[in-house]
Length: 370
Ligand code: AOF
Ligand code: ZN
Image (cartoon, rainbow, N blue to C red; front, side, top):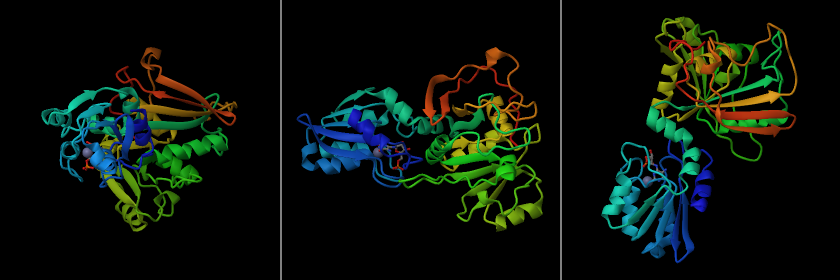
């Protein structure tokens, strides 16, 4: 299973919206076939492993990091391939929450006389596919909230200077985070202040380029903004009734503009934007701020994970913005500590990450985006 999980990890997020899966075929204690999920539309891990094993698969054990699928999707059901290959035992790390599979894959194997064990290595397997699991079970993308702040939590000076709070190493990690998400989302304030490209720049590997999403209720993003780019992969989420001329100019520049019925606070409803992204098979979103967008994310308990880059410097200033605005919590008890917290160094900076606990009573459920 360790080998299967390593194969799964080596998919390096290229399979989205499919989960990253690894499979090995074991015959007389030796690995005779290995496979990992190909990018969506390509063969699943089991099929590749069985193909490599060939005739050696007959009577062998298949170890796989997710329940084999039993449905016709973009590719045929894996269970049929497993049965046809003559596998006699299957060890799976965890069930596939896809309602079209969800235990039926394991059941189909059992019905064919295959001995099935499930649960080996499930913790690692779950973590590896946390984005897929959230998307498949909740109908929203897995949301990571990321910010870079000073020791006292400021993301800029009172005069608005923010380049750069953290050092090179932390910024490189920021690009790795983009690589691991299907979309990057910011508020219009960030676009106006920084004119970011929101692309992924990584040395030595082919970086995945996320969809770029901007929350912009009044359509004040300039058509020449770098975030729009020339690849047609920029989505501007706005309010219905936003100025038609601005919309035409942004669309002419290559952006996709989508109006949403505003929330009770008159802003772009972030939850609805996430739902749309999920429908378009974006299984993960990296929210990079600014403070108001992060405010909405936390007030509405939309974040699954937080990654904070903290620079060991003090900025101070009553008017210097903090990483998270919004309403915040009324009582400390509602600000539950993150779980699974990790602390690492990145050059002189500190990287703190962890998982959000929902249901602790975040602020108003109607707060919208920028
Ligand atoms: C497996 N092995 O390696 C993966 C599985 O459209 P398709 O045919 O590619 O099917 C996608 C679904 O298959 C996906 O939603 C998930 O349920 C399952 N992924 N299953 O047996 C694999 N990646
Ligand atoms: Zn499959």
